[in-house]
Length: 297
Image 1 (cartoon, rainbow, N blue to C red):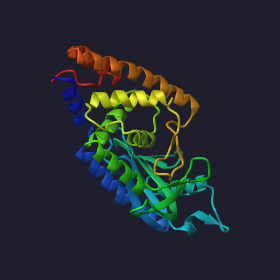
Image 2: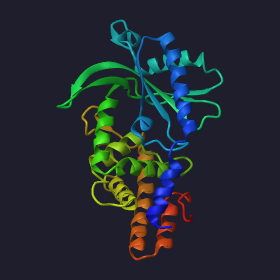
Image 3: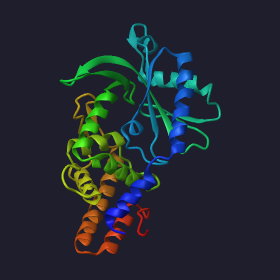
Image 4: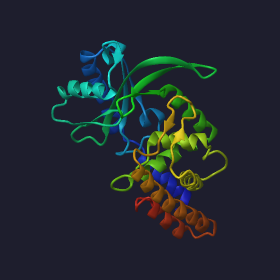
């Protein structure tokens, strides 16, 4: 088995299962129905990895954007603290999911169903404005920023941006992102790297454009993280401001250490492959993916 064949085999293994996708649809209906009874729900859309086709099996959370009426996020003529809204959403959903683990994250309410292979993240927000990218108008929403204030986002614009970048790469960008997500999730705890940051970074830098193998795309992605020192990225769509790779400085340092190790091994693997030393190259990739890279078959 060549390195390229092993990469394709790994990609097949990380694709979400049909059972996971059915669970997504089931949770969508249940959560939406509950929110409609407690809030003026304007929209309830699937966003994140599953909407961008970059989710991986048993590792990617399912993200929903719950757009509420402005009256639901105002008190006394002002917008409430975004953490207050998250608490209200949690309180309301807890009445339905009493036996379910539920916690408040930076920007979302995280629900982990018993026996589920993934968590469901509910991101509440409200409509802010319409943004024109020169061709099409897209809605912009305000969502919790993790510190009590509000952050602007436009899933539709980001999904279009990523889709166009994927087309320019010959459909290799989305699959490379999946491989990078498998790399970060192959360790316990997972390597601290924001999926949103990863997607925007690889798309904006054209990492997968040109005649490249997945091995080369991965090596270049690791190199890019190292060159930038895993620092925040300015949103190329100019909606979400600064997009951090991690939540804290210790996490950034941990990510940089992991990226350095992976970068060095990846370029050694490419050199070994170029010299016809396929077993050595695959062993190096196996180390990068924490012994989850297919060596045989």
